[in-house]
Image: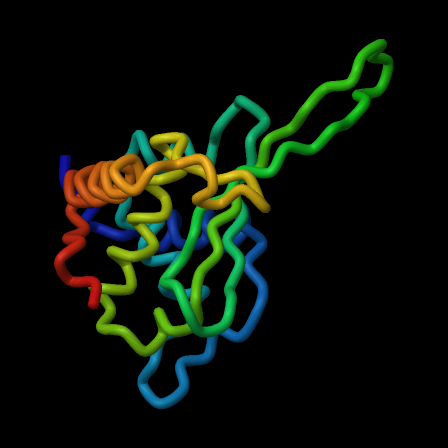
Length: 165
């Protein structure tokens, strides 16, 4: 399928407005911000994946959260119980959270984009962990296959996982 190599100003503006990205977007010491890495990665996704993340009608939201040093990232699904107005029963809303390390800002750009795309692939594939149970229910082989599947999907979008250090 490949990435969207032509990143339009309209798409970048839509990403910025829809995701309500917060934080410092200034590039210090020639290092990109997490905001710019997220925006560039989303802008380069294939149209169908981009539409699923940005224009989904299933009520699910994707949050990108920056974290400190450590992992490159992790995808998490959060279930939120709510009672819609006029409803007689509780409804659930799912949110997918992609936790990203500030270390991405120190990586080569293509490697940082590939790491973010890898985490997006986990969301698309439904490989999101429940907080508190991360890794507890998956075997080593299942974890390796999950990682390999996310790498393959990200690679199909044009993001090469072998660029990630």
